[in-house]
Length: 463
Image 1 (cartoon, helix red, strand yellow):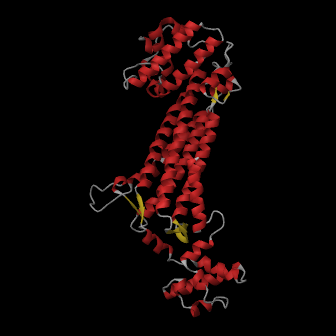
Image 2 (cartoon, rainbow, N blue to C red):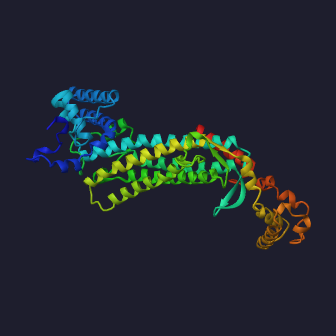
């Protein structure tokens, strides 16, 4: 058996593992992603051993130099792992270290177990990936704000039950998704806080038996704190669930954005146009221009949901402390990070390649009796109770439908038959500009409020 394939646990065994079991058991094909994080944690652990006098300065320096050399070799050689055979990334690193510096390398595992080793490396990897995800979310937010700014005065109909409801500024629609993404940034930030806790020093289950200064090791690795219980330290995967949960909601928001844009890009709506750069054609129908990028964005959401459910299902029946089931956590998180990463990059590109058909959107916002609520508000302002105003306007809408025209196209005599409170000034209130301007409460779609919201969003991103 080659050195890099030699298990870390073979002393008690007299026969090698069955090949099928080894294939089933080994995780190197996917956990090699943790290589840099594991080496970084091993360097800090070696420094902790040295400070505690468990290994000599000479031994500590040799181990650290050897580990740093492994990092350099991996960064310089893209095929570093291609031909390697190992049970997992931890045994791979230890075998390579021994090969490089001799028997001194066998001391690196003193005072730790693979249980706290993998938990530490996994947390380090996740912490860096969370930071990268947050930056990608910010990129999508910038693209949303850029799109809003390009069409700052444009109007579209807002929908409830997929029926035209009231007119809003297109920038207001963009800012709605900005708010969703802000909550995603917040959730990933919270997940990072719970991830950034160091379990190293928990040992296999009962804590390390050596006087290692865990606080010093944690500080070297940039952790905010230490796990407080060794049983929990090696078996806690809440942080992995936190990441997949935050990712699930992120994908919900991207999927909703995609669904809106798919509808708006259809011939039936015609509000937006996607450039050729983010569209596909049909193999049969020459006229087709399909929003495949948006459909993929929507479709990949289920994949992330599945990973979150897989994690929860894996954890829910485990007794304390570490169990081999936990090996399944990594592929779920790795795939989730990969999926949201490409989805966020694609979302930014799609938004950058989207243009608004302002005239079509405005025409849709100006028809379909979207100013009915404004007429009701007009009557309320003149003293009519809202419930009566609601019924009165409903009758006026029915009358306009029968006449085949909009409310604001009815003659004053036609409108005033429903209430003597309706006068010539009603037409100003029923205009599109007036409808927008009236929604001036905080969070509303009035031009003034939307300008403020855009400025606030830009300021937040700059910070």
